[in-house]
Image (cartoon, rainbow, N blue to C red):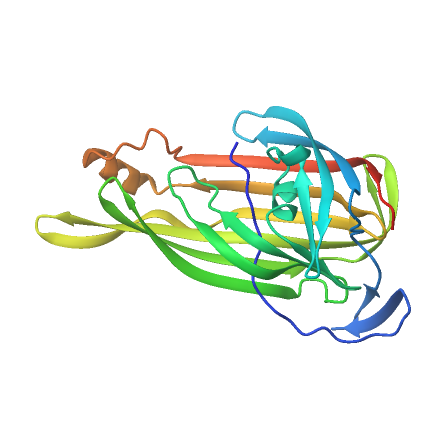
Length: 280
C-alpha cells in the first residue's frame, strides 16, 4: 500500500493560560476540558513501538506489521523522527510524524513536510510549513488549519487538474482513554482530512469539454490520540476514493491505459502503541 506523508499549513495565535495543567471553559453551553503539558516527549533516542494493521475494506484482508519511531535529532528549530531505522513507515501517522521537522509547545505540535496523493497514477506533493497536528486548548471540533490549491499534470497526453483542500481540526480532550487494554490518563485528539477533485479536458467533434475523473470527495481522514508525557498512543486512518465511472469509460474508449489505476479503493490503517522508552 502506498503510505502517506501528510501535514498542513497555518500559523496561529496561541492564547496564554495559567501554569495549571488543566482548566475548563464554557463553550456554547458545554464545559470543555483544556490541557497544558507535554503530549509528545521529544528527546533524542526516545522510541515508540506500534502494532500496525492495514485492512482492505473491499476484501477484509488484514496485513499486520510493526513500526518503531525514534527521535533522531534536535536542532534550534525543532526535532526530526525516523521510522524503522530509516525504512518505510507502515502506519499512516508514522509517515506524517517523520515527514519533516516537528516543533512543540505546551499546547501544540506542529510539523513541516509534505503530503502525497493517495491515488496511484497521479503524482503530486503538497509542501507544508508549521502544520498543526493538535492544539490542546482549542475547542472540540475547532478548525486548526486549512490549505487549498491546484496541481496540474499530464495523463497520457491529457491535461489533468487536481484541486485539493487539506484541513486539520481539534477533537476531544479526554480525562482517560483505553487503548488495547491499557488505560492512558489525560489524552488529546485531532483529525486531518484531505479532499480532492480531479478533472481533465477532452475534445470530441471539435468541441472541448471538462469531465470529472474524481468527483469532489474526502480521500483521507486520520484521527490521532496523544497521551500526556507519552506521545502518540493510537491512530486510525481511512483512505479511499471512487473514480467517476462515466469518465473512466470515456478515457478507456479514447485509448487511455488505466490498468494501473484502480477505479475504487477503501483502506483502513491503524496503529496502536505497545511499548515506549522516553527520558522526559
